[in-house]
Length: 321
Ligand SMILES: Cc1cc2nc3c(=O)[nH]c(=O)nc-3n(C[C@H](O)[C@H](O)[C@H](O)COP(=O)(O)OP(=O)(O)OC[C@H]3O[C@@H](n4cnc5c(N)ncnc54)[C@H](O)[C@@H]3O)c2cc1C
Image 1 (tube, rainbow, N blue to C red):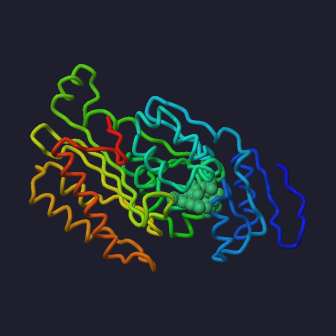
Image 2 (cartoon, rainbow, N blue to C red):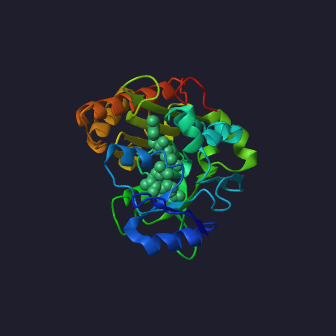
Image 3 (cartoon, protein in one colour):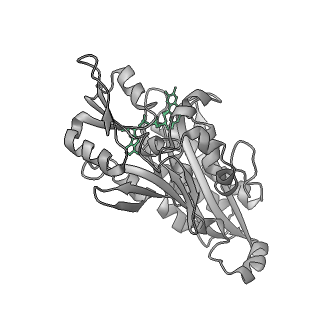
């Protein structure tokens, strides 16, 4: 592995590991003085704003082999953590099968930043705007534990984000999006597929609410992905919310409460009230927790209502197939 020459006392040493094992070893060696860096677009905002000191060692992951590609497997789509947001955004397969992820990335920063920024950095930050979309597709994270690759549900990875024994030391390699959520609810038998199509209607939508239309930090990010019977019964549903500095989460209790129920005004009111209870956003100078809760509830409930009326979209206008 290479390293650059330290030019001044304040410049960090930049390491260029070639393998996950080398990167992981560097992190173990330098501990809190060493920081993984992918595109560096989020990290630099911390240094520039003074909210974090420049670390002594930067462990640049861009040269680690095999992390800058997308692979279609039998069970899902594997996105390498070093893929730029721009490469993800322009990938037709991702758009076709996981349109909410494309939609989420479309709303992150600006084109010049998306050229550098990576999907891995967005996920590893624990607050990236892609996270609710990934959560609503039941994404898994693949990470290196020092000896082997390990898989976790993204929802679990985020649940332990603030636990120092789990969170910050892990080296993220990629994200896997399973295909099973793309088939009809519970139906993978080819013969029954045609019949299921007539009975089940899938829908999904992603929304980022900011303080202006574009190039804006999120106030609320929300994703909903589900299936309804032709009589309006919820067959399956995933709801994820994040935004701002809030670590996104799935509303699993609400998902269970909605499943098997008919979408009617009573159910929509129930969903609205439960989102106010279950979503606990962090507030800041720009938006209170109360405002964020109401915004999230409006976004999700309106999409559920539209789904029941067969009007669901991915957000931003493209119809989700
Ligand atoms: C002007 C501007 C606007 C922005 N707007 C948005 C926005 O709208 N939405 C949004 O979500 N983000 C936004 N960002 C933040 C940032 O660009 C994105 O979150 C981006 O995806 C981060 O990716 P990166 O590769 O640059 O991460 P980095 O900055 O390299 O890293 C981010 C964090 O993840 C850790 N990390 C990186 N890779 C790994 C890995 N493989 N394993 C373990 N840890 C890792 C780093 O140590 C760091 O803590 C914005 C940034 C700027 C400068």
